[in-house]
Length: 473
Image (cartoon, rainbow, N blue to C red; front, side, top):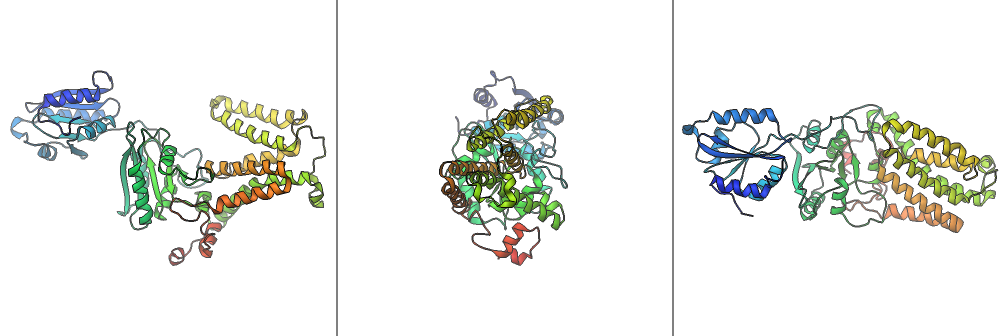
């Protein structure tokens, strides 16, 4: 590929027809026109441009006289191009990437620079509340697959010149736009430099899975630890609040999710509803979510252990004993139901919406009645696993819910195989997974519990506002 474009329009047309495979692609258009007696060529992608702006520009170009035509591209853009977003490019590789991303490119005979006129528009769905991060009160907008819309949603909330949004392109084939958003004087400069260097060093063919592809390309270590290193959100208010608190947000084109980093366990468990309600209500919601997830982690392994040792059950909890006959070992019942719940979740994702209600009814009847009466499962096992299934949806992070699920499965298997020693080892593994885990900035995953910061820890449990001096201790 040539290092620069030519002043000869025919040479440029020949080169870019070959580079863009114009004759083979029906949606890559080239239009050769006369502007003030000069042969010119416009390259654009059909469907990615605003037709009304193109029509107005072409009408204006036809009105340019030879006497008013400047000698260079800079003056042409300054004097005769009545549009805001215009760049001058010489590098053919960069020009090809810009055209394929939807930016129309104008070549004029005698100019050694191409004029990039950015009036592209991407197909996009409406800005609506995300299905997963719903709130009872507060903003009902959410990120979409178009990165410019997502940055605008954050800019609308943070009207401060210190809000920086750096854009880069990743992927040898995809050239996916990635935006790094942060507050200039609030983000940790060392961690910011680390993230910037990571992005520059990434060499991948394409970010096919958007945020997950980028996460795996940036940080390849410690994949055995199930606890998430990133917080994902589809809510612009959550992303804006994290930026104001000093976090870094990464936006990826074609993805409706934002990556927030670094993040600790307490930050992952926070949700927007905690702040859209008064402090007392927000504190109750936060504490109830933490308690529910903690119970869901230990409920079934602890119940299994007590079934192995009925004499340990207090008199007030004697009703948890299984009185009916057990046909399938309890460990097998619990493991089967763990996988059955995931099977129902996957089935619901792939079921047409018109059939989702009949499917849930059938699944409820089969799992709730027939499986107990058939002898496969005992009623107590179904009850506790139903609570665990509901508890998985008490917080928005899929990654955290699956981390708790994997540790619960480990504790179940260890308890079933090694009794009380297995249960103790399962708890030890869970604690070690939390204590030894580090955020991407090297901070403790359990901060402010480790290292201990009393006032900050209190703010993580209770929805209160600390003085600025205390928050910076």
